[in-house]
Length: 184
Image (cartoon, rainbow, N blue to C red; front, side):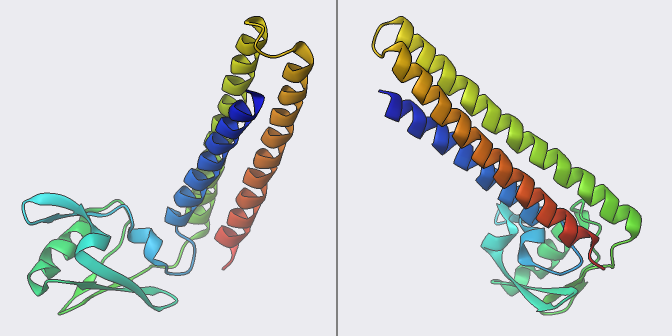
């Protein structure tokens, strides 16, 4: 019984970490990486599609992404989607699309840090919510006499240790991302 609750809580905490890593991959640092364009949606074939489904995205050099649409007729649509995204990018089109990334200013870096901190706090809240849900489940099991009070206390301690471990992981990832953002 308690193992099921612990496994469920750990799964939720792991998902919070994965969501944080995904959010951090979208935050722009000084270097080009394909994850920057992961949220761009392109009008293609009568519907909105993610950019990575209509084009390949590669890193040409430290400050340039190379976007190659699978269908040459999609070059204009992909260019337009990148321009209209809130990323502040200005692509150059020919047969392929080159997306130069402007250098980050000090103010932009600080804004990115704020976003990173907000994402980290969101993950911490998700982890604490998983802990709360698990503890409530354990209390309900103890109240229904399906587990003993000692089992409940032991399981609660295990869940608290899990919570601490995942929260520390969030803090480490945040400090790494902040250092990465402040590199010039």
